Amino acid sequence: MNLKQWIGLGMARPRWLLGACTSDPAMSLKKAEFVGSEKCGACHTDEYKTWKDTYHNKMVRSTRDGLLKDARDNWAKDSKGNAGPTKANITGTPARFEDVEYVIGSKWKQRFLVPNPQTGNHQFLDKQWNRATRLWEGYGQKNDWETQCSTCHATGYRITSYDPKNTAAMKTTMSEHNTGCEACHGPGSTHVQSHKKADIFNPKNASKAEADKVCGYCHLRGENDQWLTAQGNHLSTCRTRCRASRTRRARTTGPSGIEQVPLPGIRGPTTRSTRN
Image (cartoon, rainbow, N blue to C red):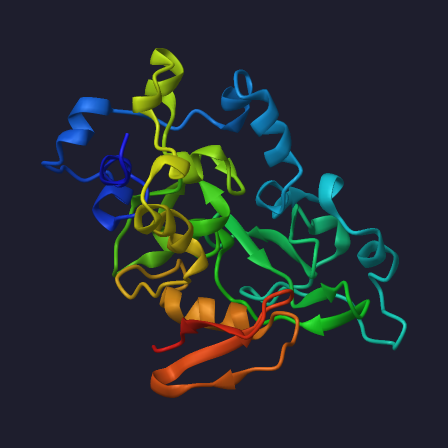
């Protein structure tokens, strides 16, 4: 399966996210669906084991499975007396540790999700745990995780119902949390049945330009002004806010609004667009 066919099967373009009709022959020819990483692991045991140990598999976890011990031990306040999370960002309602259903991240920082009764989705708490400093710091993300972050931090993501005049009623589905096998290889139901290499996309066998598109869909952090979150915000604004609250790094701004961000272990800055 080539990249054009995979995109046609519902990964990245708005019309396919909505399940709209299309003349793309890949849609009628393949009709592949997402089956989940565990299904892939039944045959690709080594690759599955490797993936299980990566952060692609560990970004979104239940509180029981992923909570950092330091965050739990310092939930009330940290060593400098900074209070831990106390309220939900969207509704502004008080929140307790017992309300947390999911944790996000674990390497640099950890954020916390509680239910949003207004939409049936999940919202962030007002503090994040900085693992490097072992301190609490403010976090102001005010968008449902399911209608903003999960476009990259879930696999098989689809918008199934969308009304631009009532974004709070947006409905979404996903095959699994985190960046699973099919986030890079495309939906695998046809491949599972046929066991043919031609029925699955493999970035290893693709051109550099095609392989870069697979990673770039998320890691380029492209802006999307067509779709709004459940709270009616543009994804570009949300992602900019998400970036700004990351572990602080020295930043310089180059020409044409290109932000130069020094990354650990890489000589010189990497660049990405910050234009709104």
